[in-house]
Image (cartoon, rainbow, N blue to C red; front, side, top):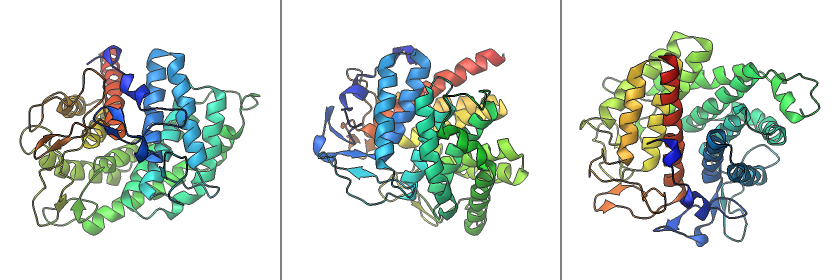
Length: 367
């Protein structure tokens, strides 16, 4: 699918003047479920990618909307609240480390995009500077991986920034350059390798004693670390754990993630259901980013095969995309498709569809 055919109607249907709603009942936004920082972070990435692709002001407006939500969600200590009800009250004082990492990913991605106005970049700088001191305290592997991916975009921004340091438009974004981003990235990458070594066993090549959700961000984060530091330990762990994950995900010849009803505990078998769209998205994104790093067509082909899960190459041979709304169904259950069209599912699909077009264009340019 080419990005020019993407239907973004459901994205606008789910978005109000606060941010993007978390859930829908079928295709209708379910207001009582409120909003999350998780989803608004994903929505920010999608809006930035859409604006980069189309240069349409309506997508820039979305960037401001989702960015404003994240700005409001961040506490003075740099961490993020996650769950907000429809009355605009946050229900938690502090979100999980996963939430923190996803927010850093979104802010870093936005900062690195060359099309983003300086006012937004400076806000990214403001939020990132608040958050950076918290990175050393991360304890959980997914938060580390998401954060490492986000910092790789910050590093890219610093590397590619050619703007005069005296530019009057530069505010707090300039202060990021005074931080040793690479040192923080190496800290996180080393911790991921340590976690892997702690849990690795004969026949078990993983970072925990259970395979659950968001699994592909681990090899993705270490591929990014290898790309920057060129240390073989990062590449070796990324490749070994990815092979283990591929043996699970493609055990039937097509992409089938570990089901969220039971997961895959060491010594047991992978749960079959439910299959969630975010797993296809993050796995394909991992492959596409590996292709950009290594220029190996294997990664491109695996990314496309994973992406095709949305379009019928799955255990039920059904399409997950609602052609009327542009929404994505909430997954595959043992009883069939979950026909709700929540934000996570929609954003997962849009994010990877846009990235697929980008890497395919890159491949053509490299030929």
